[in-house]
Each structure stands twice: as structure tokens, then as C-alpha cells.
Image (cartoon, rainbow, N blue to C red; front, top):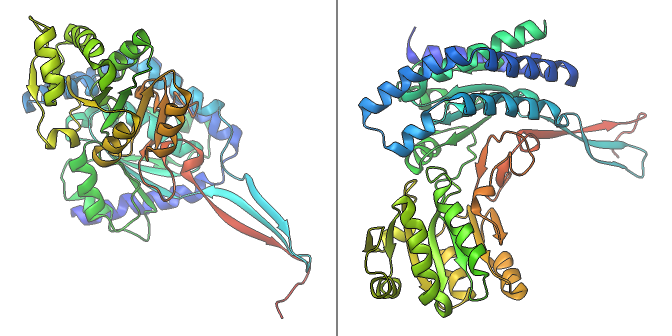
Length: 428
């Protein structure tokens, strides 16, 4: 079987499964999800063994420490996957909701009803927990899913999908086996082949680095929901509470630097830069964060800190556009909230940005004028996450402006149709 034939078969199977999946009741879907969660926990050892094979391959490939962290499955992350499935089961069913209804003057009744999208392709790198997250959200929303993880996570992804499918079949006799499928080959040509099948595939959602997402968007013939990168900012205003500002800054950069909602650029108001920058530099030095700074920040840090814990170097113009996914942080001194907003709207990626301040007017201006999918006042950018937003496990984060934006949960995985109920009306 050729690669094109293989991808066509996957897509055909998914389309057929999506028709059957749409018939499942909410109770049946929830029973399957709960069984899948229990099965993941019961197979923890097998999951870790498969993941260990992937970790060995990834280390030989030369993946960074941050990327290896994304790939690793341990007891805590497996438990989190299972918990995510249970959270999805507990959420309201997003399908068959009446979104709008009206009765026309001629008596024709119209209802706008939520429906599954159909077949969703998820393309992602490392992070095998995405396999469980994406499959569970697609399943609850009535969508068949085709999963294409990175070659470094192939063993982990395949065993997660297999465990979930087997559990689903045991929990519900009507479970369509092809509702969850993993692309079995790491060949790059599989992606354009799969995404050319517009008669079977309804949507693609890539998750990963900018290169992956741009490559998918450029080759796909089906709609793509995307975010190219997460260049997130924290702006420490002149009227910020210092301890709060330090905690938010440290969390946004260091809590998990390899993810898209981690801060990449710290902006500090000129009025407090002389005191705040030395303090935060010392704190970031605990994690050996490399600082790439503008001339003003460089002058402050080199005059105030004799033995810096972190490497300090001058930022280039390209650095301000860069998503590092690592312990590297840009630092710029700005002249007030307007300058911070201008910097973010020019260099940012419309993902997640935060202001730390006690000044309500400054905060309101920032929240209104920063053109990003998520904006925060006195909170870390790390909260841009489906679980943190109460959506259960997320399918991804969109920085598009048409359709879904920000964390995507169950509701964002539905479409709708209009239903007309008449009594013999005809149009004149």
C-alpha cells in the first residue's frame, strides 16, 4: 500500500467513525472516557516503558533538555492525563445545544443547533499527553480524530491511543474503533497527503513550534486553526506591587519555560527599573536564566550587580520576536504603559500578555489595547490553558481571529446547523 493509499484509508475510516460517533449518547461517551482514564492508570508501567524507548531515541537525536521534559511521561503526568479525561467526562456535552431559536412571521420555527465538526487531524511535537487530551476532547464533542505526533514520541502515542480504544470498546458496544487513530508512519510526506483529503478531513489543528505550524498551514487544503508561536510578555508598571511583580515574573518564565504561554520578554517601567531589575535578576539567576537586554537594562544591571548569576548580553532586533522555549529572557526598559502596549503589539504573537500594576486606569488601557488572545492583570501568562480556564483538557490555543481564539475546549470543537420546523410554509 502506498503512502497516499494508507492516508486515504485512515481518513475514510475516520469519516465513517465520525458518523457512528455522532449517534452516541452523552452517557455512552462519558462511560467510555471514564473507562479510558482508569485504563491509563492501570497501564502506568507499560506507558513508562514505551516512553523510555522514545526518551532514548530523543536523546540520541540531540533534543534539548526542555524538549526532553515535554516528552517525558512519569507517574504524575500519567495521573494528570487520566484526571483530564475524567474532567472532560464531567463537562456538559457540547453537542445538540440550542444556540439560537426564532419563529418567523409565517410561523416557520428555526433553531441553531451545535454539531460535531466531523474529522479532526491533530499534528503535534513531543508531549505525548496531547494524545490523550486531544482524543478525549474530540471524542466528547463527537469528532473522530487522526493524531500525528512527532517521530520522537511514536511509541508513547501509539500505546496511549491503543489503551484508550480498547477501554472504549469494553465500555460501550457502539464505540467506533476508528474514532481515535494514530498515523503509523513518521514520514513527513504523510502530512500533505492526509491534509489533501478534503472530502474526508474537516479540520487540522497543529500544535508545536512555529516551523511545524507554518509548514502545515502552507501545505494543507483543509482549514487550519493555528498559533505560530508564543512570544508572551509581562509588563511591570511603575505602580506594581514589587513582591507580586517578582513572583509573577518568575512564574511566567521559570515554572515551565518550554511551553507556549511562558514569558519571553519582560518589560519594566523606567521609573522602577533601577530597583526592580537588580532584584528580579537575582531571582532569575536561581535558574540561570540568560538575559538578553536593551542598552538601558544593561547599564542598570552591570552597575548594580557585581557578580551576576545569569549571563547578560545585548538583545538583537530579532530576539524581541523570538520564542525561546528555554531559560532565556528578553528584558527591555520602557517609558510607561503606552510604550509597553506598542512593543507588545509590534513584537508579540497575539498569544498571552500581562500587566502588573495597582493602577486601575493603566490596567484597563492595557487590557483594552493589547491585541492578544489572552490578556491579564496581576496574573501570570501561564494561565492560558484549557484546564486552568475550566475547560478540561484543551485541544490547543488559537491566535487566529476568525473562529476559535485562545484556549480551545469542547465548545470550540463544534460547528452548528440550522433546523427549520414548518407546517407547510412555502416561499412566495
